[in-house]
Amino acid sequence: MLKQRIITALCLIPLVLAGIFWAPTVYFAWGLVPIFAIAAKEWGRLIDKECNVTQWSFTLTVTSLLIIINVMFPADELWFKGQIHPMFLAIISIGVMWWLISTLLVMSFPKSAKVWNTSPMLKSMFGQLTLIPCFVSLIALKSLSSSVDPYFGGALVFIVMLVVWAADTGAYFAGRSLGKHKLMPSVSPAKTLEGLAGGLLTTMLIVAGVMYVSPEQELGLLIVVTLITALASAFGDLSESMFKRVAEIKDSGKILPGHGGILDRIDSLTAAFPVFTLIYIAMWM
Image 1 (tube, rainbow, N blue to C red):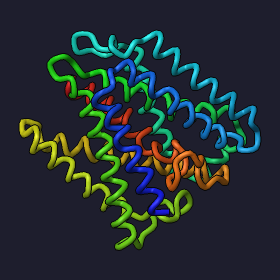
Image 2 (image 1 turned 30 degrees about the vertical axis):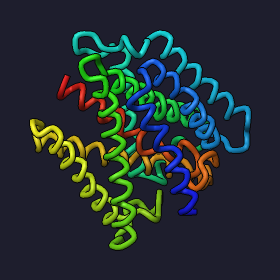
Image 3 (image 1 turned 90 degrees about the vertical axis):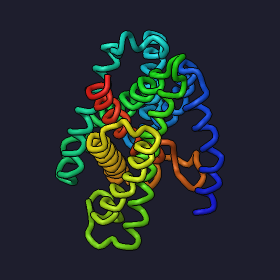
Image 4 (image 1 turned 90 degrees about the horizontal axis):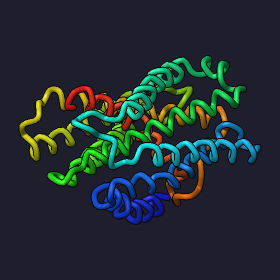
């Protein structure tokens, strides 16, 4: 399993980096559509793992919305005089509100499941709120690239990914070596408070790296934003775990050997990107 995970990661990393840094923003936006379409198909299994009609209906709905977004709001026209298009800001804001609600659902699980467990409509809505704001946030950050600094937007996307990867890696090793107190045993029995703390501490390496490259940044603000983003990523992971546990599904899919499905790989990112993007817009734009 570990060998498969490493091989898959080594194959994917160059593609991810190429898309983030070198793909034109419009191509990047369109390239995300099939990735999120696969994630939508996987979320369809969380709605009803036995009904293909439900799964494909949800996939078609999400994919159609993503295509409409790309057609109506071209990625290279989202920013004007430092302001993002109001529709994108609204979607990102709604996404952050959803993650606040999702956090409450996770913290009150399994009682909260009584509200949505038997409702395909609610689970479908939750899936759209999970995927679409993340899609929009990725495009919003990437499109900050300019002729003056063509890699700026890509760098922001990459930093968020680094924060999430650092938090996941730190949590994994700290949890294995020090973990004693369960974080959310009813949602994900393997996760511990020590793992969460280790993950948050590991993200400080990203803060150190950013300060080294860009020392003019305000250290305290950077630490706070990094920790909030990392915490959001942790609850993004827990949220998917909650829905998978109710659906009695171990992995969302099998498309990535050793890793499961697309949704399994981006669950933390689906929360981290909207949260970081909204903070960035509020603080730095």
